[in-house]
Image 1 (cartoon, one colour):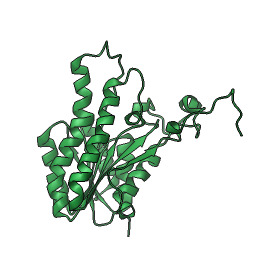
Image 2 (cartoon, rainbow, N blue to C red):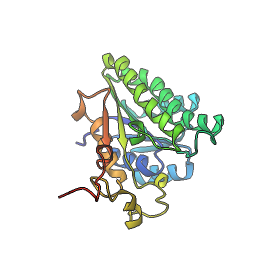
Image 3 (cartoon, rainbow, N blue to C red):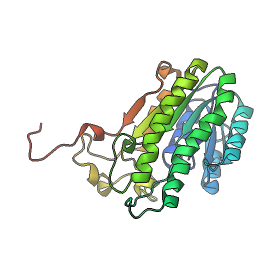
Image 4 (cartoon, helix red, strand yellow):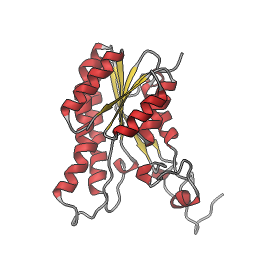
Length: 257
């Protein structure tokens, strides 16, 4: 028996990167997985390669009707108890250069999307006797950087939204937590078609406690923990998977082991 046997999960942004890796891991652990994305060709291919325990559905996470269709599909497959709000987009620009439309494009996907997803999932999870919602935030939901005002705002907001949802949904045995990845080797990280990071991909991280870029499977395993009953008393919390980025960096001018 897998750790997620008997459960149905929706994974947004599941057509590639962390979402794809998460969907595959969940299926390996016994879940039926609904892969939700706007990348139809890629999403269909992932679902087909996973097999009978996966379905693909086109979902623009900023659209309420798309979410309703995804939840209906999930409930038709069994006991819908897991939601991974992974879909996100990155936009870099100075505050003085980005337009309000640029800003809101990020907010609609990264912040509004998880809000709608949680709202539309609540009734089904309550009927199932509980569930786990895993909102993928970022290291930039704990700190920030120049040029990432929209992205960082959306990820900080997701933390607050998750805590509010944890308080509201807790009496119904629905847990809500955030995962905060650091740099991860995905298309957002400019991985392109490469399957393994090279020296150039790790170069930025050489002064970090773990001097390399993270891998999608390392984030997926944290989501698996939160989706499973192993984390049954964890809600409203942040789980950081950043190779120590948030702890600080090694400085060559100071002593080190």
